[in-house]
Image (tube, rainbow, N blue to C red; front, side, top):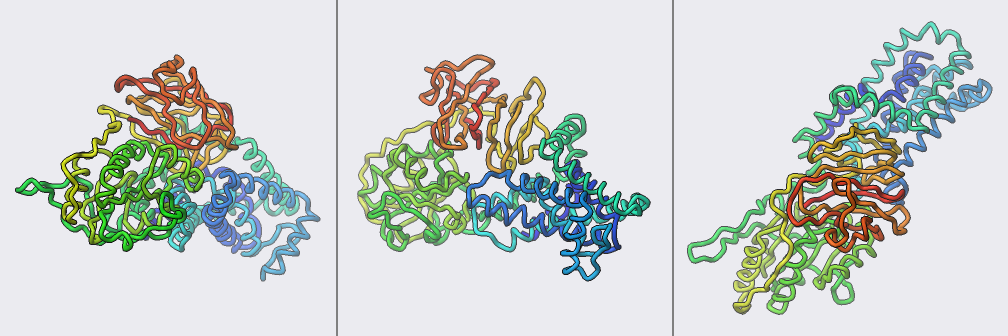
Length: 583
């Protein structure tokens, strides 16, 4: 966490030098040029505090209530325009100033809107909301975790350090601006009205997304390090590692395991050392497929071999493991095996118990499943992956851990050996488990459409809000591009009349999709400029359309073999995209 706080401060300072600061900069310079010496200090103090509140506390509340992610931006525009209109009406500004003076020991005169620390703080508080969309990958990662886990002081400290880093740079910019604009400030009322006009114009520009269009326009022509000087820092291995620790990884038996195939002893048996005591199931919500849907405990399962499988229902890697898990459950349950699926969500809609229950029924899962919405069991194990399997013996000790797909034959041997150690007679017959293996030769890694984790997009830097994307005609290999109007949010991107293209190398293409109101909508799918044959594309495709009728994973492409193609998606307005995976 200390490393993230340090990175947050430096990244915040770098962000204050990027084009993202342009909506804030004119107001900060003009407001800081009036009043006493302490006013700029008040402005940056207010900015840091309101930025911290907006990017963590408000986002946490918005996520909990299921409100749109761009609500902060809309609120910022309203506050900015209202404040500007107030300054443009001197009698109204005087009344507001009189109210402020009750709290400001050095409140300002009738023409400057306050000359002390507290009057500057009020302006800074409004600017913090405007500055919130500038949050970079580090802070976006903290926000994502805060929206799905318990809020703590560490995440607050990261957001505050980000705001302080920007505030320090803006403070020195304002000091320079005071000297340059001081002659104009002496005009009193006229300058106050002009300052209010600047705020209104900036607010109207933000309302029409012109600030974002300007940033995107210069990003097309400038090197990325000039457009976003904090990008290299925030994408560094150290920063990403610190974010993994924030999510709960790095502690527990899972953090010590390699996930490699078990070694074989001289007698042919598997070498399964004790890796540690298995943590209990903690912080779970609903349980499924248990008597009366009551919670299970590892202490209550003592004497049985337990396989704990961390999964989430929109993860293709998890879905491909289900045929094996179901086969092992059917073959070895009576011999002493209990499989427990711990459903730890990645996206907000996966926290809904109804969606989880529907996925359990759709996939024919009969073994117990627990909801781990707050990632407490995930964190207790120190887990970092979907899927991840922990094999626990009858004494409650973890004997083997595997991350991801594959090694199914070895994993079944682990089950049989642990059952044999317990004295159970499992016989010679194997389960006959069979499922879909990942395709060899896939070159395109997974990516997310939400700004918090989006990667490999040819578009300029993505940020929350409605955008009209301009993009090059050709998409580079293993890259993605948004065209036309899309609404970007932290976890997803919502179609507003635009399209999406990707140049992929794979046999299968999967995309997590949903709709804004739960009503079915369609996505037109074109492969190399032509409609996909319905017979080759899978049951989700009708003609050349994918029907999005629930929030889940959809197979868009099912080819005979791995190949390199360009996929174009033309979704109806209101279709939400979350993450691409390939196989």
